[in-house]
Length: 298
Image (cartoon, rainbow, N blue to C red; front, top):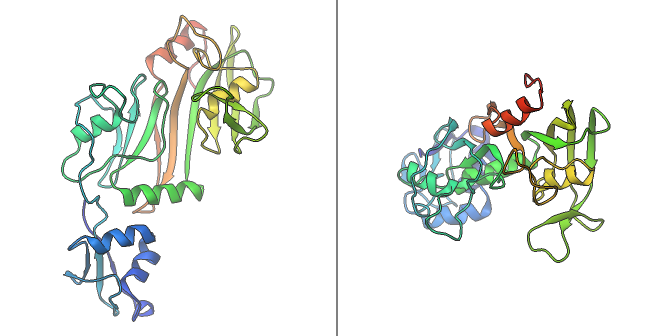
């Protein structure tokens, strides 16, 4: 991962290096403290300096945005479907039945294990958001803690939007609705969630695309990021995902909740470019659509 560099302007003359990095690159206080400890990670005109060094117009200020050490995760080779990759980020089309984080079984491959095997050098594995093990589709991973923090800031500022496709039981009553229902832990369970008055704010949009034979293809957009949010919300309005054994019922047609992260738009944390990515429906959901005689050309 290359150093990030900025040329000091007249208006920044006399300011400290940390002031310049904070304004230009959004470097946080915690990351600034880590830079202080890393030899050669902070430079003015190619020479190592402290964060309190003063700059002049025309100086080039550079810092190392990479992680200090490689990830402490066992490398397990696993085929990856890469939708987008650059020096800072990688976006995958995650298959079903692959967890994002290392599991209890050290021999079970996960996204992080697979990426550790795929990456070289100091690239890290920092998922920007998570997908349940059974959910397929677009998953963004930052290659350093600094990039991860920048992506989280972009999320909070509304510059990161993911849209899902799902097949649900029944037919939602309207073509588009916003589900505004707080979510919290289900009493007596350490895993399940439910809609409850004292839960955390949770909002999702549901758009009906097509219905046939008692099932519907819907587009879902989460505006918050609660655990199992889309699954809980659809079950709450009486239309659980097909195959969702946790919030609905099992299906002989699909062995997981029929949920797919289909599209993603976000502002790149370094270039400022707006990227729009997509991932096609997986085969198991395509089969569900064809069996129900849907028109899948949405």
